[in-house]
Image 1 (cartoon, rainbow, N blue to C red):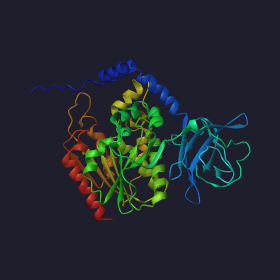
Image 2: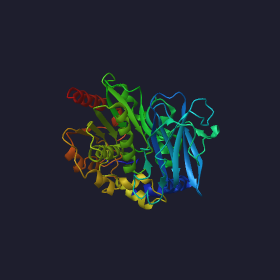
Image 3: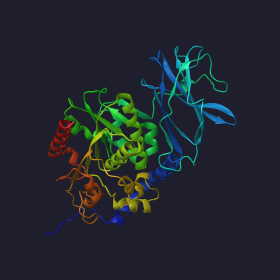
Image 4: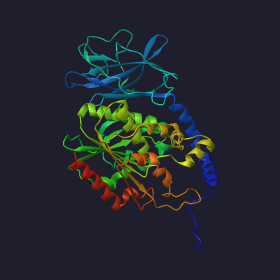
Length: 430
C-alpha cells in the first residue's frame, strides 16, 4: 500500500518556504532588529525592604548619568511585596525610592527614602553583557529609612504621567489561566518577537492562588510558542489539596541559558519569601531544556536542595536538526535556535553534571509521528533519538512512552492519569 505524506516536505523546501513567506510578512526583519536590541538591553530588578508595612506607595526611580548629571529616565511603583523592575539599554544608572505618603509623587520631609548602594552606579555595557546571563541584574535590593531630603544631585519629584504601573518581572503574581495575557497568540509573539513580549507582558512565575505552606508547589514550564494556557486540562485534574501549580511564562525566542538563569533567580526570590521545603518541576518540549538549565544552576551553583521531582514531556534533549538549518539559512535566527542545534554548547553544558540521587526524574515521551521525509523516527515534531538522548536517559528514574504526538500528549487522559500517579507517589514519599 502506498503511503502519502501530506504534511511533510523536504528539508530545503520547508526552510525555503518559511523564509520566503515570513520574510514577505516582515517577520524576519522585525526579528533581526529585536534580536540585536535584546542583546543590548538589561533587566534590572530588586526589592525594597522597609521596617514596617508601607503607609503609601513606594515610588522607585531610575536615574541615568549623563554629562555628570543624574536624570530620571524611568519610574515605577513597587509591588505590594516591594519588588520593582526596569528594562534599559547600555548606560550608567542609579536607583532611588521613597514612600509617597500623600500621593503627590514628590518626596516630602519625613517620608522614607532609600538608594541602591551609597548610591552605587550600575554600569551596563557591551563588556558587562558579554556572557549570556550578565545582562540581567535581579538583586538590586535596598532599604528605606526616614530622611528630610534627597541626596544632592538626585531629583525628588517625578512626572506622574510617566510612571509605569507594571513590572516586567512577575514574582508570584496571582492570575487565572483564562487571563488574556496567556492567549496562544501571545506565546507566538514570545517566539518571533521576544523583546516585544518582554515589553508587553514581561517574564515571571505566576500563581493561581495565594501561597499555601501546606501544599507542594509544582512549577510548569511551557515550550516554544507556548503559554501557561496550554496546561489547563492537566491543572483541572490535579489534586489541588496537596499541590499548588505555578507557571513560568517567558518569551521562548530568548537564549535558553538566559531563560533558565532568570527562572532560577525568580524561584530563589520566592524561596526567600516563603521558605518552601519542596519544589516539583514539570516541563514540556523545549521547556525541558529550560528546566534542566534552571535545575542545574539551582543545585550546583546555588547549593539548593528543595527540587525533588522533575518530569519532562517530549523534550528534544539533543535539540532539533531543523533549527541548525534555520539558524544557518534564515535571514535572521530566533536566538533560542542557536541553543537548539544538536550538540550546541548549551546542550553540552546542561549535561555537565548529573542529577543528585534525591531528585527523581521521569522522562516521558511521545512516539506517534509520520513525518519520515522530514525527520527520522519522530513524534510529528521531534525525533525520538533526541527525546531519548542517552544522557537524559542515564539520569532518569523512569522512562515511559505514550502513543501520542508532540502536541497531543498533555491532553491525553492516559498521560494525565499517569502524571498524577507520579505526583501522588512522590508526595507519599516526602
